Image 1 (tube, rainbow, N blue to C red):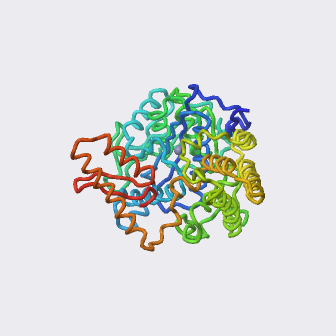
Image 2: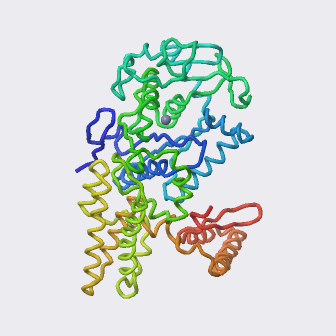
Image 3: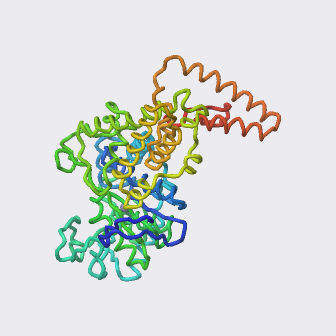
Length: 479
Ligand SMILES: [Zn+2]
């Protein structure tokens, strides 16, 4: 069995074969940082984190690009309303997203480019599209993609232009209502800092343009997988593909879209207010349980979110950690391996066939979790019969690691110890002693010893940062 993925462009499950053997390039549409992250955003992040982890575990070298849209209409209007600079508004929510990703153990992408950092690349793409006859200028500052100039427009979502719903803004300088903006002219009243010069006048990027330009920069003209939420297929992804194809680029070889989070069977709606913001949900449940809940349903199926979603996830999570705790208890795990095996060691643990087969089948996480729970039951029976369950527990951890749920890995390790019961003072004293020894080694130019001490701290989950005032430490996963 090898990895098969559902391609939402061809609408079939296909055997996954990367363009360059052993390497995978993924572009994932990230956040428009205009407000706080809700669990729908996190579902997408978790789904593609599981994909990345499974590809890496399968031996691929993965380059994951997840962009940050830090300029758009909503960022401008909301920041103006709040009376703060648009970039301050965007940065604030970019940080909130980063904290939410960290809290849920979503591994950092290889690159996380911001739209405003790639204006040059976008203007170059506009010039190329004009040159090739697929874009035209309107009023000063406006540039549009000419959908009628490009026969394959509509290919991704299998629509004919004449049957498409008009989603684009009406504008008198457009040739066709379906033409979409590559570049938008600076408007009266908008901040001067939200406009950049182009050969066609000052303005700012249309949303779709950034992803084509940034995918090209970080992954090349053609790459393996493009991902995002199902709501992005049209018009966003259709337009991304049209721009890139019209520029002569191959673009994405396979498209993956995650389904919505629903409540009461409907797409999670604004009427729910703030109740499904990640931060708010995390006030009533632990991040491991939320991650479990968000990842447990197949990424292409709607995830119905209710209170029982979280309580079911909590119960399942407790069954798993219960086994690991009991298997790791003194006497049954004399070497203490269950709690101490590193990520690299877990990579060497052979995964149960049923688990791998499920993951290879378009990331069938629910079947993969069934394999996890089956092993938990085996482990419980072994312990009940007075046998040890070390190997089973390690297999369970290895499977959980693929799903980003290994309770002994970051950021979950030590999650139960966040309450201050005096241990933090003890911890500080112990770590300070190690840091003093390291400072001494550095003063003696004994770099090997200094590095060894830092590595020891790192292995224990302590991050050391050198600053002008000396070394500072924090626990990985702290903010
Ligand atoms: Zn995009």
